Amino acid sequence: MKRICVTGPESSGKSTLTSALARHFGTFYVPEAARDFLAQLGRPYREADLLDLAREQRRLEIAAGQQSAPGFYFADTGLEVIKIWAGFRFSRVHPWIAETLRQFPADLYLLCAPDLPWAPDPLRESPAAEERETLFQLYSAELTGMGAEWRTVEGQGEDRLLCAQSLVADYLGMNF
Image (cartoon, rainbow, N blue to C red; front, side):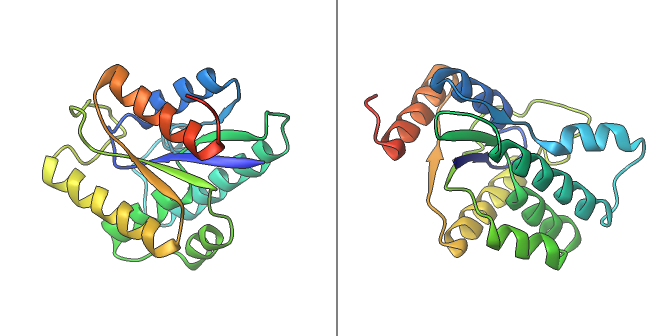
């Protein structure tokens, strides 16, 4: 089963886009583990928490791969987010996170450009436009370094969704 991972910096529309793509293509999606994980933590996260978070994200991915679907599903982020965030915030990445990402990459990554307005959220940390652009560049470099197949999603509102739908349809060999 193919996994199409929607990824990118904070407040770049990943969750909204992932659920809309799943509806459009008649499949399901794996939610971002971080949102529930951090909300249930009950305290500010620490570097060591990122490994537990990564393991939970991987558990969700494994469970999703066992579901019935039309041959593919979407993931609202993946281990690449945790790897990039760990390196950005703590200047190091736990080896398990890096190795597991290397072993189990998504089949396609849709990298969301940070061209949407910042939406405040208690779980978000990087409102500065320069920092969001830096993170976008880190994602681009990571995906390229992994040898991953990836495309950039840009635009506002319906244009963003149409961009992503077109990229997915092209990847899957569907008419759009």
